[in-house]
Image (cartoon, rainbow, N blue to C red; front, side, top):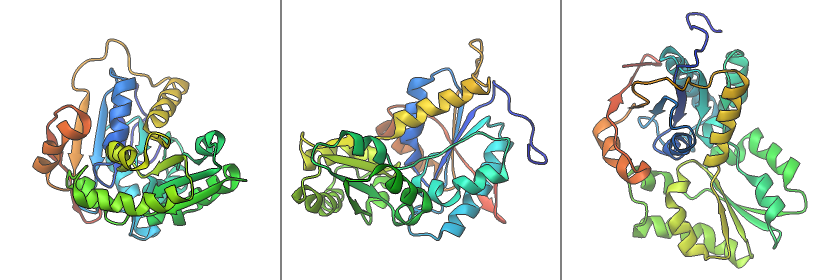
Length: 280
């Protein structure tokens, strides 16, 4: 365990972070599968979106956020951000060897296994497509399958503003999907945790014959497997507060989005960046 940090306790929370509200899709899946677990979520809305940023910068943010979540007692860290996973997951596991991490990778494997047309589409940020993790996934699982890619410029910002089905959000998705549909994709892989919030619009554009893969439930299952393996599942008699949400942005704005994005309300705290560290 890193200096100044205590060994994880089963009663501690699951730590989850993302560049913004996208990680709430993973948080929601964790809450559905493990309602008795405590969770602390941090959205780095002061720096959203991560996608256009350098991998080195995203890595620095990820290390600082991990230290912060561990200081809040987190027993496992979920990097609920494809860009941060691409930039930092390997380095985080090296830097915190005693900490269990769960990251995100585009679900190319199930898409390649299930496609009937042999053509799948991946929607993700530029940093995710440029990362070694994505290249490895393509090399291992996409042999013999045509993979079409689009970065959906501006989509993260629309979702951060709560515009899940407006004209601009539709335009961005149509620009991404229509060329893919013309090449007969039958599966869309969501390579950004923000994108599950626009699945209804994706399905409306793509039609019922196209399957959309949301990675969040599989990530939640992996969290459960690691907690069980490390004997860190929260005791059945655990009680008290089970959800804590923090942002480096505007807490009132995020609190206003929670009912629409998660179907529940919760107070939101602010954690501010000071000298490269997070303070509450």
